[in-house]
Amino acid sequence: MRTTVGIVGAGPAGLLLARLLHVAGIDSVVLESRDRAYVEHRQRAGILEQGTVDVLRAAGAGERMDREGLRHDGIELRFARRRHRVDFPALTGGRSVMVYAQTEVCKDLIALQLAEGGPLLFETEALAVEDALTDRPRVRFRREGVEDVLECDYVVGCDGFWGVARKAVPAELSRVHERTYPFGWLGILADVPPSHDELVYARHERGFALLSMRSPSVSRLYLQVPQGTDAQAWDDEEIWDELARRFETDDDWRLERGPITQKSVTPMRSYVHEPMRHGRVFLAGDAAHIVPPTGAKGLNLAVGDVVTFARALTHQRETGSSELLGAYSETCLRRVWQAERFSYDMTTMLHPAPDATPFDERIQLARLERIASSRAAETDLAEGYTGFAFE
Ligand code: FAD
Ligand code: DHB
Image: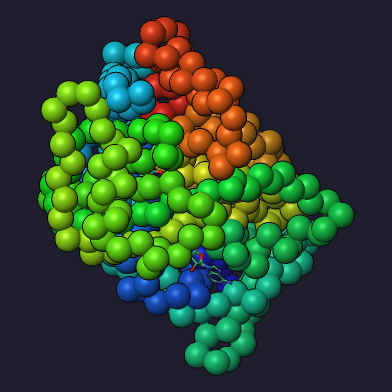
């Protein structure tokens, strides 16, 4: 098999890249190890930055998002039993975010690709990406038990943190920057209308809690739990009791409870692999970097990477210049490191560490107080949350 761009992985990065290339008239083949149902139902991110929303619309993938997504103009910070709202449009010149789940973004992009785009092969596992330094990089893969090769002009590894594409960068050229956190998030989906019309990020001495949503009738909530916690060790009433405690305020706000339909634990990690390109092999999304989820940057970073690649390849085709392709890693990493910093700041401001001292607690509260009392500090949060510009 032969194509211009071989794409490994059909998560949000791989699917959106295939769509952007199709719109630009460039052919691609997507290889995905899982089946379609698995990819469409994997519960993950829920918040799209303004820039991501704009890109999906421009790619012709925004119709259902615009009908069913929920535009959010702010978030609430909750600490010391108080509430503080951050007003995004007022602080950023009109920017906002959209609540629209990753599952739905993937469903929309898969439907478009199957109807209009090039091959999207599910249950097809990439085994290795080879010959990165030649002008014919290739992906070895296995489909229905048979090994085969996809020959490409370029390969983009969109195969997530556990994928194989990153191994195409020789170890002696790779630099890995990593931090793990001594806690994770226990996430639940519940059939109950959200108890607040915007997201609530709560810092409490017992741990962080987040109230989010998937629709007007489905809530998504998270609890900070110790690293290594088994989600099944928490029964439903325990989860609701703990959430209620951490969200408690001095006014009459109440957390509504309902049947929990799903629960799982996500570990927290910061990770950056440099460089993001080796020859004609490019890494995008979680294949190159991970952020802790506080602030919802993971999916949006993946979008920024593939937009950068699609623009660079289009530029090369139109002008003959490979300059933007050559600058891919540096261009992406500038935005990646800003998102790493933002996610790290949000995580360390809102999660008490297991070994936190009273000093650490006061510093966290002082950081929150600063945001609540200084327009400059609040603007910094609003700019980061609504997203750093694509270059
Ligand atoms: P992925 O979505 O991981 O997609 C990679 C794809 O490649 C997968 O479909 C995988 O099956 C496929 N693949 C892997 N190996 C191979 C192979 N060898 N051959 C072929 N295909 C392969 N972000 C937030 O903002 N908020 C959240 O609440 C949040 N929760 C998360 C929870 C979990 C458990 C995880 C893992 C991530 C979460 N994230 C969250 C991060 C966000 O979901 C990711 O940043 C986003 O999915 C990145 O998209 P991607 O396309 O780069 O990678
Ligand atoms: C969600 C996840 C996040 O990490 C976040 O900061 C906000 C919302 C969510 O899954 O809805």
